[in-house]
Length: 538
Image (cartoon, rainbow, N blue to C red; front, side):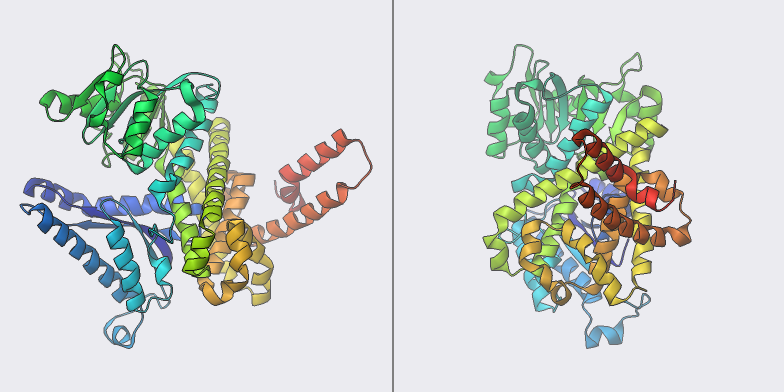
């Protein structure tokens, strides 16, 4: 969706000819939908959204043969992409360039991509002459930020869940008891880490009444045993390994080795009642316009009045709207809730471009901690704006989520065009925006290298996305929508000028001799609306 983009490489391996035909029919729609969702969630970072879905025919193959074919497919796909984006004398001769400028693509691991693939892709990019091979693929075992190990996606999901519980259900999860049901197992990335975070943050207050994954489901109306859940997460085992002796009186584990177990697993997310449902695993379109009513009881009430989408595209757009209109279900959309992973991968790309492998490895602990703090902050800023605009202007929450993404992306695109016409001196003035976006340790170590290490277009994209998201989270979407498109970039550039003026004014006021309460009020007012007021735009 942009000249500089990143997204995951997903491998789909149907086990039967019928399933392969089904996946083939929907492959393009799935890939486009995932890429579009990526574009919406990439709003806070320099890269646009992209996705790759590799459909691989492994029907009838042994496990060893299947592994060989899947690994070979990854290599063939990688070479195809590198053919297109690494310019050589041969490629200039045989390819037609309709764009007329360089495209920069970055990959990330998605379903079924393993560390062996990641390492091979990075080495292959170096062999083929890609400018920054370490940045070409994220989640590298040694010099990357592994999403599952550090729980980066789940950290963001939990921020949205926390804010949503407070704003929509009036539940303070640090003080009040609440119930959760979840798809995705203890061995999964998003689900496993979210289970750990729920127990870490809320302890006995959180009652996890149901968990379903590929192997079955475990249910207990009084909450599944926390210690047993953590045990499964730590040894990376699916929910079917839940120890039955740890169940309460009314608890049960259904396993998919029986027809009854399959039926129970498939319907758990609809059947169980809970305050909130967190889909953190499962296939796209699991809840759709044809089956969404199964989520409702006979009286029309939902089995959960709040859904926070940790998994991509678990619920179709039509089903989201129908659940909201028919039953008032508040749904935090995937492109908001699970953006922590893409933010982390973007920071990994920056680190790979700016640092040597050894520099990154020596400072990895500090950088990872700062990345986690950054993504939690970005999640909380969007969640706060999301519910503020939902409460002020109405409409469904998924619609508001998309409006926020569109507002930021619109401002980013306008600024990207405007920055092409600015002088190098003017760009330098804006560089502090990019610096403040980076984890402090990374910025301190290598920000003086950016012009040597980072593509010029990436720097401009970073400035544009940083300014756009900063402005939207502070002023709201209506401020962006009110600006004529041909003036939006100019307004944004003036906005940052006024912010600097307000910052200087606040610093000067801090030394003024006056009652602290009055000073504090003035400083809060300047912070809340000073830049916008100085622009004389209301």
